[in-house]
Length: 369
Image 1: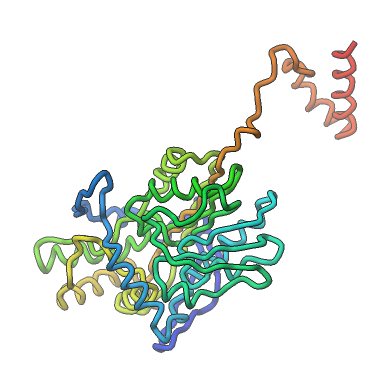
Image 2: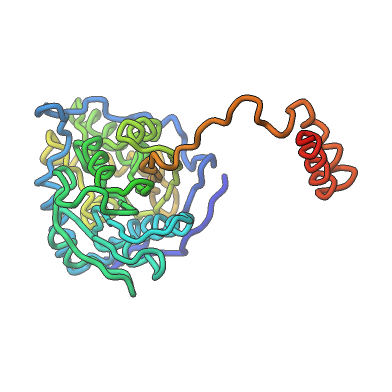
C-alpha cells in the first residue's frame, strides 16, 4: 500500500497525540474493505417542501459556535488545516486570471490564509456562524470582506460577481445541496470556477461500524450516530444538473491515529463536526460506548491505538461561457488524413521529433497544392 507520512505527530493540550497518514487514490486500504459496509440503512429524515431535510441546521450552528469559542479551538484544526492547504494549492493550477473570490463556509480561514498575493485581488469570506467568521484568519496582502449568511438560503450577493467560489469541508452539512450549488452557479461570472472539498461516504466507517455492532449487542437495535455523507459517484451528476461543465473529481483518504474511541469523539466535537441529524439519538449508553470502544480496538486497532479514516472528495466545475463554445469544423477541412497517422511512429524512430515535424509539413504542403 502506498502511504505518504504527512507529519510525525500532532499533539494537543490533553496529552495524547495523533499520527496522520495519507492514502492516495487507488492505493490499498489499511483495513478490510468488507467491514466498512456496515453502514446504517435506517436513515431518518423529514420532508419539507421539495427538500429532504436530514440535518438540523440550528444544531449545527450551535455546534460551530461552541467550537469557535473554545479556548483550545486551534488544537482541533489539524484536519481542516491540512485539507484547506491542499485545496488552496489547487488554485495555482488555474491559469485563468482571477480577481474576486468567495470562500463559502470559511470556518476559521483554513483556505483564506493560504491564498497568496497575485492569486486574487479581493476575497469575500462567509459562514453561518458569527463566531467562526470573527475568528477566521485572513489572507495577507489581499483585500477581504467578512459576511454571515446561511448557505441554504439565497445568497445576499449580486449575480455574476465572482471569478472563483471555493468551499472547504462545509457543504456536507447542507440539506438542499442542489439549491446551494445553483446559487453558487448564479453568483459566478461566466467562465468562473467552483472549487470545493467535502467528506465522502467512507468517512469514519470504522466508528460507524463499531457503534452499530455495539448497539445491536447491548440494546437489540441501532440508530444513526454518524451523519450521512455524499458518495463520489453522485458528485458528477449533481454538478452537471446545477449547470457546471468540464468537471474534475478526485478523492483522498487521510488516516488519523487516536489512543481510543473517546479521544476521536472528543476531537470531532472540538472540530464542530458532531452528528447533527434531525432524528439523531440524544445519547449513547455507557455500556454501549464501552462495547463500541472494545469492538473498535479489536476490529481495527493496533498496538499504537486506533485509526480513523476521513475520505475527502475534491471537485472542480466551470460555469459555461457561450462565447467560448468551440464549433465543429466543416467536413473535409482536415489537413491530415487519418490513414497516414501510422507513419508517425516510423518517422519518430528514424529521425526523431525533427522527422515528425518534417512529415507533417510535407503533408500540409501536399494538401495545399
